[in-house]
Image (tube, one colour):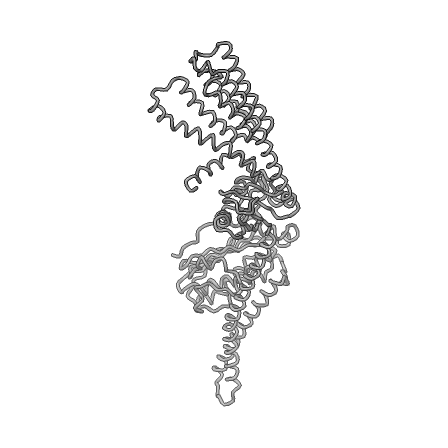
Length: 602
């Protein structure tokens, strides 16, 4: 069997897809194709040996071997068209023609070849068609009649005396053999028809069951090809049984899931038992639906034939739509990830606040207790110094609390924007002057490049908070001797403000997370720089509330450039445009307009 397995697989591949829907029909096709191909090829392969033993063949012998091409062509005709009865008619006609010609050349009705006419109706019996059997019998009888006529009229080539003497007996034998073969063919046809209808009735009961369940039932051959699919497939896959037969179902399986699909079928066929697998499959037949996939669960096991024993390599499978379950699993996974992210954010918040709140509180409590302690004699200068430390610590603590409150308002949608008309030139310059002392103490040069700006309608307090946070961060993360540059200009209906520094920069892994509350880039994990990580998240929230956008470009050890774009007229934007649509549009325009490499430090 192992040697013939490739041959049977090749024969199975030649069976027309329309015939694979029914097991008995497919078996008839295989029974028709296999003997004709194997017999013809074997006979053709023996032709050299025939020449060796018989010598140079005559014209008749060459013609007989040439005729062996006819069964091959008829088998190919059946494979391409699936017309089983027509193929049987052609085969009967070809065989009758061959026998008739050989008999005519070798003595007519008394020829040794005439008896082969009996095979014509016997062969036709395999078609399970009365019409084919009748035609084949007619061909055989007509050929026999013609041979008789030719023999009687002397139109045959000269024959030996012995052959002529036995002509009558040979004719009687041929006629009786043809009649006997006709009876056998009719009996075989009747038996085949009964077997067909019994099988059809059995399958019809299963079809009735298959039509009334929502799960899809499929039957697969040795190579995984679909031999049967239940009508429920049209509801689940949006395609009929004809589109899914053969390898049609496999071609709809998502490319990434095909190995799992084939492995489950192969394991069920080879090792038995039940195999279960989940995969994605494309719905519909139109190209416009080529990207629509649904999740299905397939449970498969070896197919039990009519006798209750497992068929050779065949598998039956049940497919069920599990898209809704997959969606729920995905939602649970997202919720779990969100919960983990929230827990991490809480842990990060507690770790950050433990430092940001405890340090100023310790300073306030410690120095205030020293000032209250009557046992300590403090001069006026020392009291002023302690009071200054307490004041600075209180302001730092107030800044942290205000940042938390602002973020809370933004997240809950309670932060109110109060737009007012003003020229932003003075506001930007004022923020730079406010932080000039801090820059000078840090040894950082603070530059401004502000062009002539028109009047804008935005929240002045929010603009100041955005600028102070950005400039303060730039100064904080720029080493001594570095430069911070603040630039501003108007492009169309947008006010663009950029803060660029030559500081430590930000790694690519941290860039997507900038703007998250309490997040600080890895360069600041060592706590060399104070801060709660709220500054940039507040900036991002204020910009989004205005319907603007923010872009961050940075490279480690080269610097960072943060660009903020705000609408010149916030009131006009709010009243005439959908905020969500506006944010999306502005972001797209911004990405196109400002994509340029970050300026490297000198």
